[in-house]
Image (cartoon, rainbow, N blue to C red; front, side, top):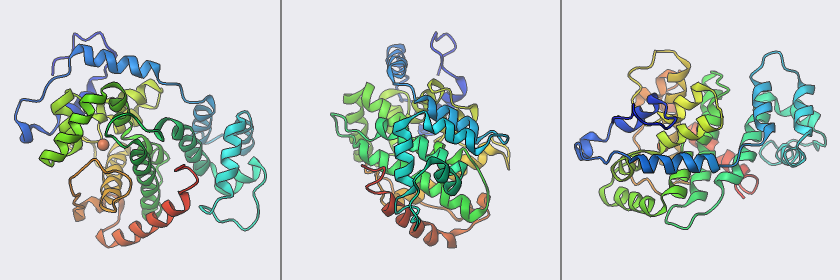
Length: 317
Ligand SMILES: [Fe+2]
């Protein structure tokens, strides 16, 4: 796909997601995106509201080993709406604390830095994702699916005792490109959904066929637009591309394996997404990079169901 002459701020590595795979399904007839389409996407990205400052600041503090709890509390207190949301989450069935959490200091102390950051980003994104568009695409189902993936990565990491602070946000955002496509190309998106259903294709293949780009590429552009770190841009932008080029044991490979496994577990459990008509297989070897195996599947699925039950009514509404 020749893009070297493009005046648009496209990161070449993101094109991997669009040029990988799909060829076996429809030969070489995928439609390359027109410059006009790309300009429309970039204009929409420019029109996306920025994430609240508190999100960036909390993310920075959480990933800074020298940051302190009072710094995080001070940052949260600058955003009244976020403060209220964090207290609501801390007092919810999700955590099930017996004692009431009445201050942000208590909330940060009992939830921990990483959980606070995850809830800050979930609350901020809820407004973007938890809406309904005019077409066939069910945006609420995408939001529910995304939250379930984020929860699933958390459960998998807990079981495998491998930390990865980027996993939750990456899982929550990995399919955000579908929302942008729905916003920019509503009619074409309906065609994508019909084609995927008719042919039994994965959604990203139908997108490449109709639009010349897939939601992974567009999601990578959103991550760039929001100034997310390169590791997140890569993981979101290439989440449907092959992992052959990634180094064994690298953070990039761990994130991609985690995302792929979470996506399959959530879809197999039938949570949220109803636009992908393929039935996901979960090969045994997908569990190995996490030090787990297929016998963990039931435990993960049960824990996911419990977590989603506790979250419903909290950030699903
Ligand atoms: Fe995807």
